[in-house]
Image (tube, rainbow, N blue to C red; front, top):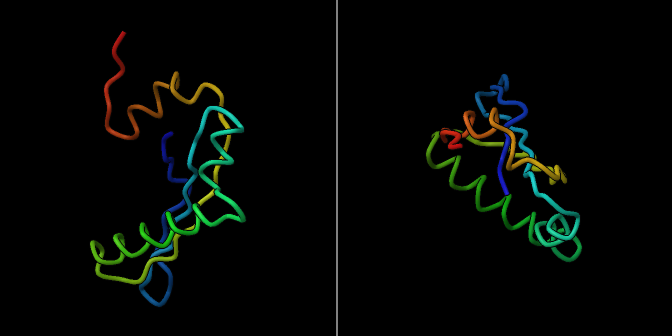
Length: 88
C-alpha cells in the first residue's frame, strides 16, 4: 500500500486539515484496510491523527480514504512524491 496526500490546509482556528488516500492493489486489500464495520481504518486514523498532532503541535483533522488502484506500484510519480527513486 501507499499513502497519497490529496489536500493539506490550515483552518482559521490554526488546526490542520489533511485528506489522504490509502492506495491498495486489490479490492480484497481494501476490505482488510477498512476492517469489519470500518474498525481498522478508524484505528489507523486515530493513531495517525494523534502522532501528527504531537509532531505538528496543533490539532489535526485527518480524513482517510481507501482506493483500489491496481497498478499504483508502477506509478513513478507516486514513488518520487513519497521520496523514493524508481529503479529499472
